[in-house]
Image (cartoon, rainbow, N blue to C red; front, side, top):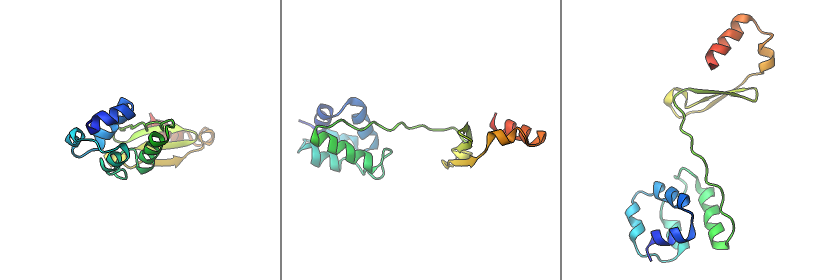
Length: 127
């Protein structure tokens, strides 16, 4: 049995896709499988993965103990300087294309009592 066949036997397809997306050499999946734990631990650097070390640790524990798998994280790629207004905060996602996300606290009900010019500047910025 290859490592890929073993992964497909133990994990849903979308988890196997996530493993493959984190690997430097997906061709390694064609090697002979030793055992799930050993092979899974050595496929890629969990810390450097998109999902993070804790997620893959939970996956391994769930498979080894026969428990329910953790939910795969959802990855969202924002266009440069995407603005989101929610819960009295303004979020600037992927600020100027740098990948940095910024949060500004804004009390929206106080904006209505501010000057008309300030309110218009704010409204034009978030629209």
